[in-house]
Amino acid sequence: MNLNSQDILCILESCKQNNRESQQQLYRLLYGYAYSITYRYTNDDQEANALVNDSFLKLFRSIGVFKNGNSTDVFNSFKGWFRKIILNTCIDHYRSNKKLKTGLIIDNVSSFVDTHENGEEKLRYKEIINTVKQLSTAYRTVFNLHVVEGFSHEEIAGLLGISVGTSKSNLSKAKEHLRTLLQDKMNYIIS
Amino acid sequence: MQPSDKDIDKIIKDAGDNYQATGAAPDWAQMEALLDKHLPVKKEPKRKLLILLLLLLFLAGTTYIYFNRNSKDAMAVNEKKTSDSNIHIVPGRPAGNEAENALINDLENQPSPLLQSNQPNQNQQHPISKKSTGMRKGVKGNSRISIYETGVVEYSLPDNPSTNAPALNSTSALINTSNENSKDIVVTDPTKPIENTITENNPNTKTAATEPVIDTNKSIVVNEPATGNKKNKLVKKRKQPLEISLIYAPELTTIRFTNIDKPGSNYGLLLGYQITKNISLQTGIIKSRKNYIANGSDFELEYPLTGNYKLTKVNGYCMMYEIPLNIKSGLGSFKKFNVFYIAGISSYFMTREYYTYHYASASGIYSRSRTYTKQKNYWLSLASLGIGIEKAISPVFNIAAIPFLKIPFKGMGEGNLKLLSTGINFSLSYKPSFAKK
Image (cartoon, rainbow over all chains, first blue to last red; front, side, top):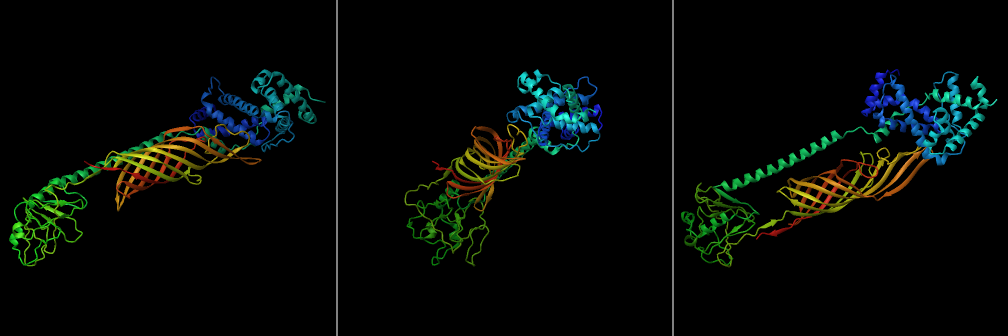
């Protein structure tokens, strides 16, 4: 779907009026983007899908707050704002379930079939993401927030309600596990 | 060779930034259901407009019925007052003092020219026969008329009709006793010619249009009261405007016409006050139990479910007190039944709720029950409509059956459910009446 900035602005304005058609349009436009993020923080597809829907619900509730500012690229600006909502949803989900899911390495990760993959890069990305999903929830969350999202340990400690030391420890352990899991694949991935 | 930390970070960051899960299929139906629940499209203005329109129609209908009834009553009164030829006393209604006085005066006045003109044969059976009721005194000054509520006027004549006959003239009361059960009494105006009100059986006597003719086959009997010349006063009864009703109603409750559980029940006490002949106001207190089943999508949870749990169904009941404010208006009578309609607005005070929640997840179906005892108040939150029939079983007691519909304006209870109820109200009403002094 090729939409220019004006189209995006129209859709956003219409979503502010709680128009269902525009909301559906925006939903289909950003679903994949949201799913890619939640997929990294969850154990299965259903959970990832539930987090996507919760994120969109928060998005539509607070869409009136979004202001484009001076950015010429409305869509990317909006995506960046939406990304924060998704991350907050994933973190809230982690915090509400962390008592049950800390300290375990999940061996069975539901496979995600990318039916549109074409090229080695996407295959690598898929394998890497699935490898990360093999980590436990605590390690995986800290790893994603620090390495992928770029949060500092102080910020991660504040978001997850843990100490800075715990955040660093979890990250270190996550990398140690990943090093082992990726050792066999690294030559192929790097080459 | 083990990858360094930097290598791992770079690879995974690239994967996280660039990987798009394009195979994911967006489920808009699920998302829309979530939006309808938490961010519904507002339809309030139209609903408010509809409610306003219904109220206006109700007021217009009540006003029309009220003025229509009043105008009919006024016409009836005018006809009675302006009628110069006949004062027709119908069964069940007491005669007016005016007619009564006319009858009494006439009986105490001149002898009947009618009888004189007809030249009754002494040997013939007097058209007005005697009745052995112990009233053998002279007519004049002693004859009385008792007019009962049944409308039967009875008077007797002395033996000699020619001298002491009562004034069975054109000014007299002419009684049509065509049969034993006839109760009609016609009192004629002495100043006007009398129309044919009595038929004569004697074929030789012409019936003049202006001359009353006595039906010789009929007997007219007058009862003389034992004491004095005092008139018998009519005893009128006057009904008070208050009405007390006991009600019981089985009812069914549904949410958006999806599921129906076993019937609930209402019982209570209503107090009515009649403000006009046909309109009365009602209020009271009703204790109600409603049983219902709600789909999971209709039940609003305070906190959304986590994980992959989905609420499929909720069944339960609630106990509440209802305070109605109703207008009851008569529509008419059918045989021995009175037909009326009731419209009003009620307030609900919910005291107890009990629900069983049914969840579904990938691992199975679960149920959990919970009781809520925190009182919730919903002022003027429900409209009720009903059309009923009422029958008097005694002068002061009525029974009625009123099919009704109760429409909520907003959701109630823990799940914010719009409880639509229907049923039949059975009532026993007491409307006291006291003797008017």
